[in-house]
Image (cartoon, rainbow, N blue to C red; front, top):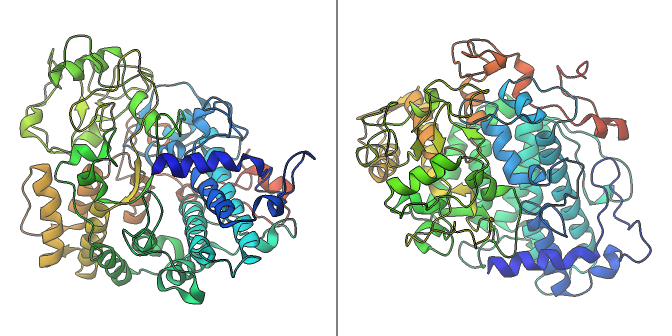
Length: 553
């Protein structure tokens, strides 16, 4: 089904949405291109248009994976999920990189400015593309409001627009706020971070309840990977968990209630954590039962050098690629990942969150620790490496193979005659996160430590799956550590450290924080949000730059 959904996105190439930020007019530049009014006629056309919006999360163009449709030098670096993960993980201690790209240096040194940065351009621009495409969809579908099935499609478009706005809210604070009336009309203004939070909340609640007749479907009533009420409720849970950061007012009880509402819908933990990130993670029902909303990839239909393709291939060099496969019992010369870009590393300080047994930096084979006796969520390798991460040393820190090129039956899609691209879907929201949100919200309501039976039960389920013991009570720092292990490289760490007050604190170092090798430095508070694109401000006089960046260049 995901192949079908995303092949429809390509079919929308007749609809040209040329500019999505400074100019929200969707009329085509070329006379031979069709207008939205010409494209959106039948219900099938609207289904294709909806797929086009879904595709904005994973596709880099309508031609090939090596050609970007936005102004970023490398097509792979222009993909939304790849750079969403990078902005949330490379800016803290969970992901570091030895590549010489300017955006890499900016992020891992926390030194970004308003100067062009590929990661910021990609996420900001693509989220605004999602907003613009959804607005165009809603504008055109409003003209066909009596068409059977159109209101259900409108609810999905509203969800995707809300998710795009949520990402902008979290990363950029106060982005431009555009609605369908801005298409070809007045340039958007800003409504403030709290105002945007309130708008997203009201939108999600409306499409969950069906206000106005536009309701998301119930869980399981539409084909994967389409969004349902569980997805909208999950966005609310995450928003409420971070509400104090976004609005100044804590919403712990609402976070707990929203997480519980998702849990009650019947999602199930995958018995084997590793299967959540394998090539067949959504053909495998055990894994898919845990997914609430995921971004779909297919090696044949949705190719890009971003997404899980990047997570798999960027993490290993040749020695690690061969060594991990050998340690897993595959024949000599086999690789665990199809390609080896040899860039992403994990500092030892972050790996210390995991319960690893028998760590040995002098080991000549294996993984560099006793994997059988360690936390089952640990997918690390240190053979041939040095303990201290050094951004100039390609063999420093740990390698991570959480995302890799094998399937749940052991098949390896990494032979020379097979495609480089990944079919593993990226989980934007899954049940484990809802367990952790519930537990943290309860702990905060209880003053920082909880023995609440339901919260403890959720944590125990996660710890049992990981093969590690559960304490008799849990506090906030324990939960932060648990989130580090359970949600590694899924785009959470920066947001977590900001919520805990650790992102800017000198007392919470990580390698190269603020450009300092040992990271023992405080960051200015304005770095808890990224700057709006300077090009967007130049095109739209209604916009004001985020505090702290006005004089940056």
